Amino acid sequence: MLRIVMDDLFKQNLLKMRNPQAPTSFGEALFGQVAWVQKMIPRKVANKLAATQFSEKTQVMESLERYAQEKLGDNPAATIKISGGEIGVKPEPTWEGIPQYAQFSDLKKDLTVEDRILDICLKMKAPGKVRIMFVPETFRSFEDFQAELQSDFINQLLPAFAYKTAELFSRMLAAMKLVDEELLIYPTTINETDISAEVMKVAGFYSPEVIVTLGANATHKILKGQERLAQVHGQFFNRKVENIGTFAVVPLFHPSIIENNQNMKKTAWADMQKIMKYLKKL
Image 1 (cartoon, one colour):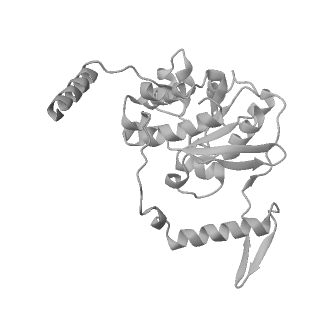
Image 2 (tube, one colour):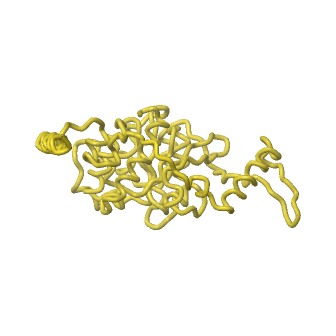
Image 3 (tube, one colour):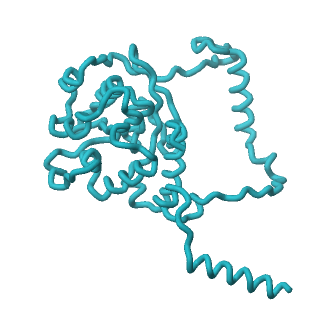
């Protein structure tokens, strides 16, 4: 009987290999039928070591955090005096001195990026329509990508990425169900000059629902910190622009890293899904 059952399983698996199933999600369409985009059936496995997974340090920090939350309440300026110091809520960095613009022409006068590139990246965008703003570290010069220009959406990505990387990133955006009018891209650096304040000027004008930083340098500039990208990628942070509003900021790995490291695709896909859920596209 066992032999008959094993023979049947072998035949079934052989038929599946000869007739592969069509992708069941755009995740499979983008990355292929790999294990981490397949729906896994959860298995209830008893884990006797679950109670010992947390270190003593983790338990102490969690207890301290709960205690601080109870004592501080909703007052961010409050502190708790303890022996040898005090406990308080670390204030999040705020962008100050960012002007508001009523017209695109006024905004354009205060931007460093050359007009030919601005026409590609911003001219057809409308305030209130942009849902996501991607922030790479820098842009290439117009001469560097002029010969690569096409007649479709990829043109908007060419200032930030080499053509091959732009192709990959365009597929990622398609998998995220983003359309042309919902996104824009603007850098933090031009010719080694920090223009990250301009990112917030553009964000203040177009009001994206989320700002996505691409790579460590862009993440440090927009978050105003030195967080390790490996620890904060895919997480949501709030950054306030004085007199304008607060933006959700999500760091991602740069597409060139994903392009050159196939193992990073799993991480990229998980991070993208978080943003899709935030935008109600998943």
